[in-house]
Length: 156
Image 1 (tube, helix red, strand yellow):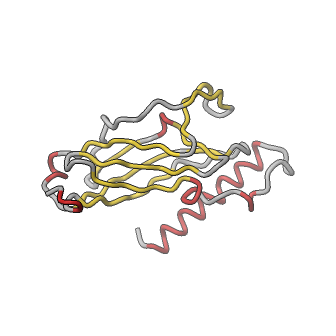
Image 2 (cartoon, rainbow, N blue to C red):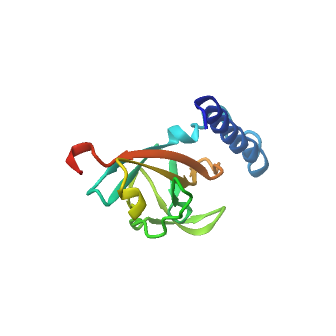
Image 3 (cartoon, rainbow, N blue to C red):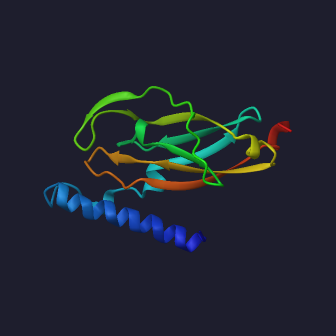
């Protein structure tokens, strides 16, 4: 996806969340202009850990949270990475998904890399996540691509 189409996709997600808000809450309850763009509410970074796994980190803005069971990781080839190590979250009775584990502030997730990925110097991962604002707005699932260097810091 080009930079321009990525920006358009983000803006569409933000607009969709604002529109959904109009159906879920009274019209004066939340000002959509005060909602953060999902990329700003859930800041994503990645680093190589040991040459066999990566650490995906989300820094979560105050007043926002991510759902533990809404994460998904894929390789550039589309292979799902099912054995990511997600820490325990805090239990929340959620109006959208019932009893759920959530993360606030920050979450670090260890993602094992596949054998095919380990033969490369750089690995692209697709990270899918979903979160909400405490104001009652839930964003549609966000898919982001990240790239991790396996040569940085002498891992190779």
